[in-house]
Image 1 (cartoon, rainbow, N blue to C red):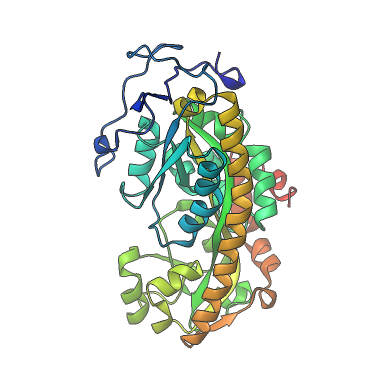
Image 2: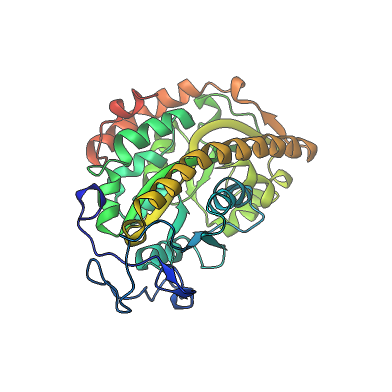
Amino acid sequence: MARDSKPTTRRSVLKKGGIAVGVGMGLAGCSGNGGGGGGEDTDSGSTDSGATTTTESSAEEVEITFATTQPPENVSVQAAQEHFIDVIETETDGRITVNLEAATLGGTEDNLDALEAGTVDILHESPTALSQRFASEYSFAGDPFVIEDMEHYRAVNEEFLKPEDGLNGILLENGIRLGDAFYVGNRCFTSNTPVTSPEDVQGLKLRLPQYETWTSVWDEIGADVTPVAYDELYSALQTGVVDASEGPISQFLAVSLYEVQSHFSVTNHLLDTKHFLYNEEFYQGLSDDDVELITSTAADAVQGMTEDIKSREEELYAQAEEEGTTVVPAEDVDRGAFVEAGQPALEELSESNWAVNINDVQDLA
């Protein structure tokens, strides 16, 4: 019987005599369009090679393929290396090795395909990506003006996402286990005027990603939401096709929006997070000791990663100011007024689409 009383096929994650018996070795089978998959499932307790499975002691070697869509120089990848990968390998004296695939396996869908197939064992991905692909009723975890801060998100994760009668249960049906979350950044407002209250966005042509829930909230607040492809964002702002955009400070700097937008207002309207996600066969194939080691290290890692990313965020605000941008600080923004203005849309989404009531989510703040 697999952990948490959830029956599943099991595969070996052990290596005997230097011969890999099965975790995350088949990256060549992960095509750019996400096609292809991992090896066949095996009956519980055995493999084709006859190698002993997870009832063996935790002294066996384990090789993990760990993927992210971000490049190696991204602060979240560097933080994962320091707080998770290095710790795992050091604590086990190299018995567990982690192969990092940073921005090498394609985009979000490709990486999720690889995680489902078992060619990736651990993946970092956002709740928005998960809800878009698997469970739209859990989009609230990545919708505007729902989550206040990281402490609030952790409470929402424990109450509504990680339980097996929550998002995690749907993911488990697809061979994925939901783990702890870390902070990636806050999405904020860019424009040519300061934005501190809903009155400041009335009629502004706002570029948004094409997420229906995001559009509903900003429409309710009073913005004129205008769809523009991300690779056309700079030119759309430059030519006046749109007046404003939203996103994290890292995006603002990466695509030089400071050249076409004078203000970056720290509205903190959407908390960006990512989760540790585990391939379920990989997870079930680990010894109990290794499950404890990996999940407890991840739980500690998300704290250190969050701190590192927040520190880097402050540096990026300073960098934006050096580029001539007026950064409107969070304390000058009436976030409560934005929440109130968008609440009718959030309540409608809650009633029609969400797995939980908006009030139950907000009460956890």
